[in-house]
Length: 306
Image 1 (cartoon, one colour):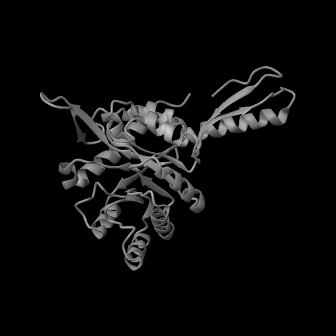
Image 2 (cartoon, one colour):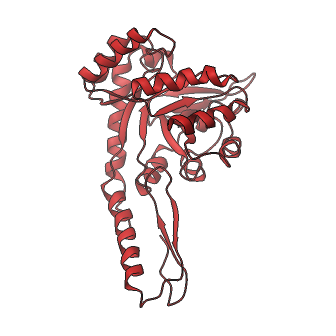
Image 3 (cartoon, one colour):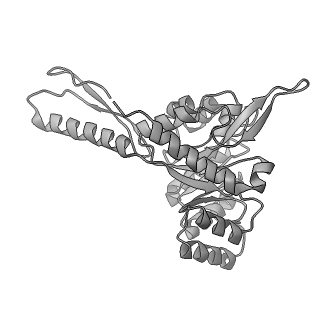
């Protein structure tokens, strides 16, 4: 948060929150202009209040439940106290409309909200991608996670995001993948519609050698979704280093720093608990409960905002 300068000077206020948080600058504020100062005080107070009251929204990415059927995944989510889901394998955009309608009805009856879906396949064919957006509209999904294999695909995804008013977020894997370097992601999104943003996979960005908290800040409000994942890098005698999933909080991801930044910016998105580990996925209950407890404990331990 900036300081209000003397009469006639520019007053810069760092007000964060919402999908496009950033810097709001009030130009040429004069102490005699009471309306301008009142607005500044309101904006400042609102930003601090949001940060002080912020609580993380936690969901589950159902890739974690890949050994369960759709019905079993729904029951698991209810049993473990979730209200939001990021569905993947258990939902198929190309399935008959009747099948997806049945699944939609079951989700609603259980009080579950599918806030997003992915990671989705995309195509250079705009009309093929349109089917994905039609599916999202039918299911009431407002965010699609993608990882296009060709940068040219972004042109038609941007057009469809505008047409349907549905946001699209790019997911990252390892450093050798197309979007493994955050600099590449920023370059892809830089001049595109603000409906296009980032699904930040914390585990993979850590495995690529980056600090998740710093990367989040550098995306400057373009992070729409977070895959809450933890990894550690193990050195091997021959070949490349190996990135292994761990329980949340036991790996090398800067989760404490990330949660601190999320609270400071009153980030309104969802932390989707996820693991790539086959072993952890065999017993998802302890893994998921541990992740929820870790987030709750770390947020409670954060120092008061200054």
